[in-house]
Image 1 (cartoon, protein in one colour):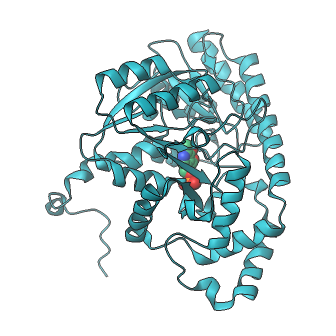
Image 2 (cartoon, rainbow, N blue to C red):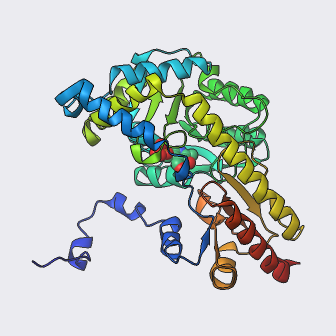
Length: 406
Ligand SMILES: Cc1ncc(COP(=O)(O)O)c(C=O)c1O
């Protein structure tokens, strides 16, 4: 059989125009380097797989088949298994978002929510406000719908609200604002309470819909939990996305949306078109697991592990990096964000020095900027690297940076 792996040039012009905006990401490129076993990669945002509760999964999947028989493998409807929706609603209520199972749509991870929300709301040229830098997976999901990005700068308290207000004055027609308020990917920073309140006030004044993407919310190491934007939303203008990826395992591909009925109904219709539903077996098994498995204790274990790893990474950075490199100190989540002096190109440095000489990979920051690309940043993840690798990798990178910046 002729297995053609490349698209014949004659076929390229048959692609829809939106395919111009569907391009491989820098992170995908990075995975090629990650394949070299000598490379210490702090690039990927994978959770620590040694924390996946394998025994509980094994019991739950067996129980799903035993208790539900063939129904565990049958179609079930787009919105998902009712009991799991109830369990998610109960967790959301405990987190200050009053809702019921009817307000929950089960998704193939939060990532699917980004695609469906963009499909629902974005026409070509619509203004999409987002943090700058923002989650790369968000840009990948939004790009095919051809929004006009307006990036809002951030500091250690999250999105700058004066800058947002200014942007809204320039673009009063803006419709959607995308934010990762808790332990943002890539920067690790959290939107302060004061700014959450101001954001909701601006959203009300400008009739914005807010897409609140918070897969790291449960992974707080220190400080007080801040209210979700959804909990500050009496008008139903916030779509909240949650996920089991970082608190159970990403391979489940289970996340959820909580939104007002008008928005949720439309999202469910789009999900029906996209994939009909999530895996019945996965939903039934995880629902059964949540009946007996102590998720809160498990989350505490994950938090403790990442807290320790973050402390080790920042300690080593402090010891070995030149003082001219700034790093964020996240109160949760998986990432710290480096800022190098102006003029420093982190992608070039990685290719020319960090990879060949220190065998260290990170994600160059340029890839996370929606429009105005800045090259003097990098994202480091401490979640999946073993402790020794964190020490060795940060020490080696620090020495190299000392030579070039010291
Ligand atoms: C901010 C953010 N949103 C969404 C996702 C996607 O998560 P999920 O695995 O639930 O699709 C990620 C994953 O890394 C993320 O960092």
